[in-house]
Length: 428
Image 1: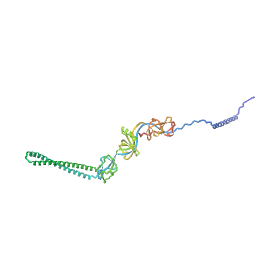
Image 2: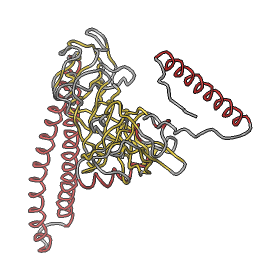
Image 3: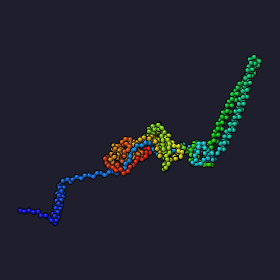
Image 4: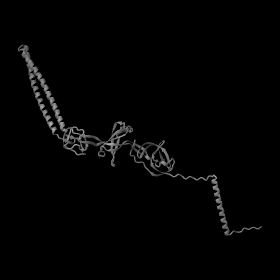
């Protein structure tokens, strides 16, 4: 049997291609149906790879080493170094006022003049009485000298008459008269001496009266006892004042150069204050409530001798020269007492430190942009700055915002670099 192969035409080839495509599509549908049946019968689908977790956006700050002052902060009250309520020591009419309200006065400056005329008259009377009694002293001394001369003469006569009576030349009665006269003159001398002493004592009393009159007269010129600033004039010209009228001062003087600032700190700082003060003067700054201006510079000058049991605080005072009148009595001021300066302290932003069950910790940003949960020991905190005792080294970076979304090993993306605030001080 003879066989032969006939060449297919173009139209036949096209038909054959269509048949093959239809067969492939049918096979694909069959495979899908079989796969669906397999899934319904419990066969597991192929596992897909999980996409990586997105980076957590955070803010971070640097760990730096710097010198940090150890400071104690408090609210203080400005007090005058000395306050004097000026009173009149004598009564009388106010004749003159020699200053203006609010004026700075020096010690010894005349402030008021009280009518001096009554006191001048009293002084003249005392001096006249003193002169009178001085004349009495002179008279008593003259009498004493006269009686002494008579007594000396009587002694001579007594000796002469004694020889005569012993020789029998005169009667005994005559000699006894001479002896009586001598004794009488001796008694008179004693009386004269007493009169002189009495007169001298009277003159001493007169001298004291004169000095008192002079003192009372001097009180009519009321002078400033200290360098100070005068307040309001409380007694005006023409008013009559009483002596030592405590309830009605004439003016109040406040010494404000230098000036005090009084403040209280908790008693737990007392040991450190005593220790650092023993090593040298402790600097204090005070800033008034008004904005602007540099704080006044002073030194700690007083530590009270007892702790207030009601408040648990110790009272301190600092002295300021106050040359520019930046501080004013009665004013409140923000006080900063510097105890010491800690050299090379490790400082981080305060918001980086978190509190955990095991203590304080921070999230440290590593070089691969993942974070590490690291425990730290806090030395002290002051506002935006925290000093770390152990746990960190300078040059590291710590998360300052976004810690709630972090776990150890999480990837982070740093949004901003928050540098630690400048070191202004801290509570020691």
